[in-house]
Length: 108
Figure 1 (cartoon, rainbow, N blue to C red):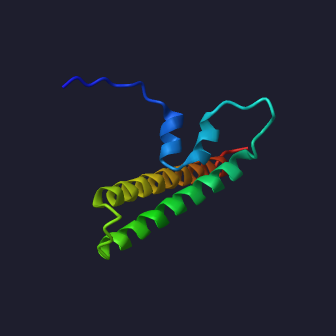
Figure 2 (spheres, one colour):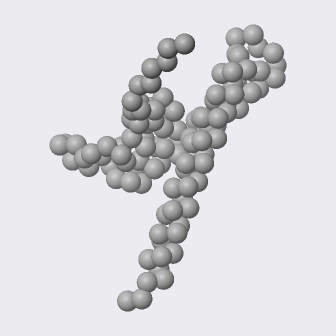
């Protein structure tokens, strides 16, 4: 077997994972100005994570009901995508809470 690996494209992976809002964090600022700030990007990312969780839940229900149009592989991928998105959002929240507590504990 001849396997060739392509270079990893983070922006494409984020788009494929359904977390398009996170791409704005990693991209450079555009010439038009700010894109709405961190809170808007984070809100969009949370909406995407929620949508991925609902999609995975719907696919699970369809597999349970033996829908022939829904494959088990597709369902498992959706569940993993949802889990990874949730873990990423949880890590961002943990970092924000830690940063807030560090700033509040600073001596002035």
